[in-house]
Image 1 (cartoon, rainbow, N blue to C red):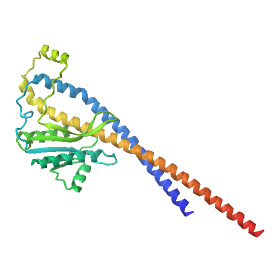
Image 2: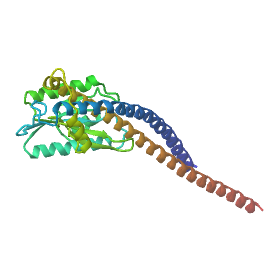
Image 3: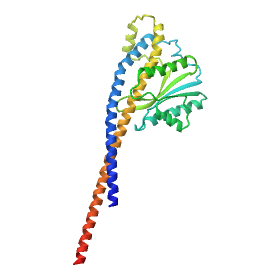
Image 4: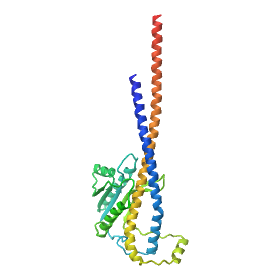
Length: 293
């Protein structure tokens, strides 16, 4: 009977856990829908911003400090975007592993690597691994704001302007679709100029379209390039938030499914043990009755 009680406790415990993971799955599904909507809503704006930069640069080299490649990269900065919470599969681990690999590569090349970590999970991971972190932020949740991205972007722009860093990279989970998200490294500074398409139709359009800019393109770029950095960073934070919620939804679904399988397994085991116990009791009663006869 003690064995039956233990099995019943396990079934109750697993069933309760399944209710929790199922609820978390539903919450993550709702949040992932919201974050995906925000990413997709920002896509047309990002595309138009890229087109505007193409029109202003005209496919030529632009002499601006934000797009100017340094002759020698001696100091690099890395923004690592992780989550404040866990239970999201390999989301945090994948980004942290990618960041650590990049940091080791920079140090092997003799470059100084400055790290800005976003998210409690990344901070605790780097503390455990004894990887230095220069700045920490835990205020960016699943709904990052443009002001938060602008604050981080402005800090990087100033550091880049002053020559404190020669390159700024971002380790982040990129959103490709609702089923594909991948940890990746993205170069934030210097800005990589938009590539002009090789398509003949596109080329013809650029050659025949003559835009008039007021004020002149150089003055527009003075404001547009810093804004482009901040908007790009905002877009990356949105993609990271979407990736986190999707990963959590998938992880909780797997946990719910596994809990269901365990519940069925232990329920079957409980029924077999109970049936064996009842059979044993009947045999003992029959044996006792025969002994009396």
